[in-house]
Image: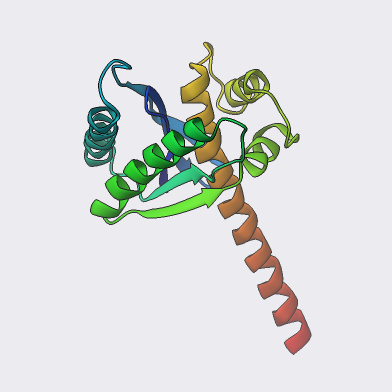
Length: 173
């Protein structure tokens, strides 16, 4: 399975694409979409949307994983992140890709074991889990963490289904 994790933003959006072979993961692509902060918001959002479409068309992920919105004191920042998330969802939907959302605390807990981990702690664990020699940027490591979270949830779900199947076979004997 190939999953794209997106850490949306209107100035910088982190992108991380992982390929899963069972419980083994490898990075297919990792990077940042940069928009000119002097451009009007509509132009920056268009740039994020078009750049994501290009990445999706180039790497063919099957699923997009995004963080849900969190509450913050800066309403305008939350609004901008929501707009960037919408661009990501539209880019995925236009290519027929399912979008799955995870709470920020779930992403952090999945990667670090701590739902309140710092960006630096997430970055460190992404490096360890993916055997990276150099640290990706914080935005890219967040995107990779979101992709890892989806793959961890998917693997846990498969294990649970298998366990339930074994239990139901045992009961029916």
